[in-house]
Length: 398
Image (cartoon, rainbow, N blue to C red; front, top):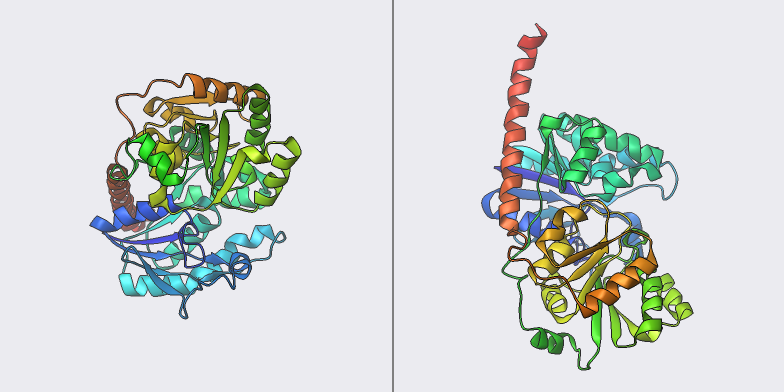
């Protein structure tokens, strides 16, 4: 099958670690299908990252994991005219999309993220007579009401697509409630790359990441954004610090909240007990997960966080907010759920997790290739059904 993917969630030369979960999803999809990507880059991010050595090449074409990628510049008006963001996105990627259609002759279009990516993909696919499937991740649906224009565009994308993939049952129910036809919605739980994420020698992992002391170690991995709730984690750590001093917190990832979080840690008096490690390559994460005593994800909103599946595959106990699809995967690992935005409850869970983590279940997450094969089957099914529907529509209308 020939697949044209449209997504802002993909690495580019300026952001090589961006959306690793999507990179590897597409890498596996390309093993058995012909794939091409249009992965736009925000002009604001491109401007902010200028002068850091790497740059997007002339022609804005690259290859990632053997997959041809074009990186058009996404032009939009920051903070204003939000009702037009879908149209800005569509106009920004239209040329690259048309070139990909001409060169690939795709069977189906796959967009990941509902708005503006999915909204624009539906319109561009219709222009070229192609079926389109939208994959939703979590916050694109769960947090859409923050801006009314985003809500309208999200609903339009979900109702108009030939198929919708949701990464959790919770998200699938929300998609249907927003107007998507139930028989066009598939729940496909992601997997992990079991060749990378698996149990291993903790002492060797600790030496590998530089842990050379007798402390207990907590780990967060993710983008430093408000939705990830790291501010709540720091409040919980301040409470934990009043009870015990045998631990250190490690933050792997980067983002616009880093300076504010550093200031918060200093104000709480825990700055000496935490370390910002910045972004790390996806291939480095298994060693980090195996090295620590407890992984923490205090998010305010999630779909199915891949990092929790990866922690589970590494037999690393974890504590996470009881939001979105996270309850659906707690049985796959040594997981503990806490209410979101409650630092005292989180502090209690961290203390218990350090002293007496839950037992590791016998069966962990499935291999990601299984999940990707399921995505491919749904893409083919959606494309075939769309073609049959269009063949029958003239006679039905007559």
